[in-house]
Image (cartoon, rainbow, N blue to C red; front, top):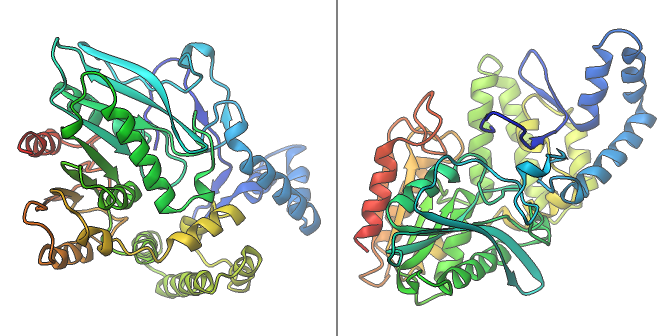
Length: 408
């Protein structure tokens, strides 16, 4: 979801059509069905788009646009309408309004990781003294930018109020960053996070010895991988990071979604989960995208599958195959610094109970004594630690985070 604000804003456009029963048509299928349901001359055009030959051509065109979406105006992960210059920073990166930021020095920055140029935002408290600490914020899965949707701005504000410098950046191929996250591995993304930390530590007024990582969701896997490669990290924070493999986490998220949207159709739930399992096994055999598509078509695209499959193309399928069996417990055992793990007790996207068991098992592993583990679970909170009907995490979430950082 995107936060609403007054004035011109960048608008991400993705063609989807929600059916009355809760399933979703995506891409050109959604365009065709929307036109088919329209009045007048649009209806025949929609019917034409759904003819098999035209449908195949439309998919090719749609994928061409999607694969080059980072080169379109706005350079967001989704196709975007061009925003006016007043809504962009001097570097061309979209600006997200975060409210009054008195006493803060904020600017756009760029830094390299090999051939990749990463663009981000650096904010430093301006109170006549050095910041007490620094943190690199690493976003979650998909085409996440430096703001991770609406999640990072309030987090950034609170950290700055606590005297902590903040650097966040656009993922490869998103916003102002070069490269392509779909062509990367989690180790590649961890190297990007390491480059961000090195850049942050090189800034005047940022104490290198107290600068660490904060990783949200998939970003948690990324910062854990980055943390195990360093001996100089003072701490690491993971937020809503699964302690399972991506394959297990995605199945849990899909199952939770299906049980809500198809509560009265247990057979549909079973069919969709069975197809998901076949796709995971196909990924383990390194099946190509055409093989995966055949599995989906042979299963008749069961209800609710679009929750997992809606945006998958050849590039994303390759990325998912590389990532699906990543086991974070090895990195958890290899940590050599204190670790704070934060969770929402009602998070529908990750298996919180299984994750807590995994964290409990590594707590007894042979880690250095100073590599402590602190776990906080916020009852009733979701994946972004929001309580029901709240726009952002509650004050106690931010307070517990900064209190823990002050004690490091």
